[in-house]
Length: 104
Image (tube, rainbow, N blue to C red):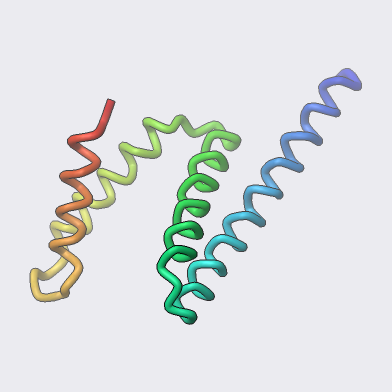
């Protein structure tokens, strides 16, 4: 293994650790913004969480399209086993429709 290979591995490890920290920080940001009833910061923190998730997946060798497919599959399975009266099934179906309509 060359020095350049070792540097590349170290850089990737560092980026993965940074993305993991960003996920924790953005999740905490959602909770803090909710506690303050600050919709703007809720949206910002949720956006950071979603972006960090996609970037971490990519760094771990998971294509964006594969992650999207997994999300859609998980939604379908969850919807199938969620009772209508659980209150979130409608939103899950809306999300599934949204993702299906926007797949490239």
